[in-house]
Image: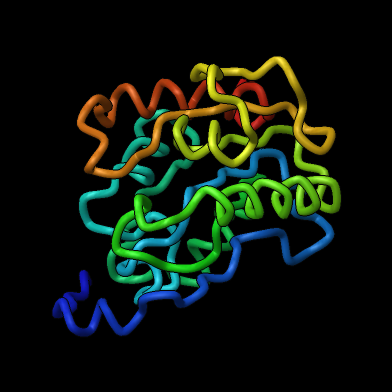
Length: 194
């Protein structure tokens, strides 16, 4: 059941940190690590990544075959849903851990610090593929102003690195179908899809 929040309730989650969705058991092989820019307020309120009702992340994963059962994160993801993602080899983190109403509230230094922290996390967890969702944030965090979407020529902490479209409803250039194609491509690179 979808929850609703008043603007004041959402604002109370400003600067909150949402825990990463990472392997919790030895049998969980982290194949694909999705990296958001930072949690939105709805994500912080539900403690579920990409949770805003207008976000197309989970519908795109489903349409692309990356997940096999629908997830409605706006109500907050269940432990069973989190475990299904982990069992598929999928993890989720953010460049910047603190919640804001818009990613534009983040500064360059914060994104650069997040990029360095991501490298350390990837070196520790050793996923096969890292997919950063958002070209502008990637360019800023890693000092790569001319980078394009898709597979990057350099690896990140030993992992194959991709930049994929941001699934936010504010990203009007993308549709669920175009996101599904991009996310399916990284899932194939990670060995989640054939």
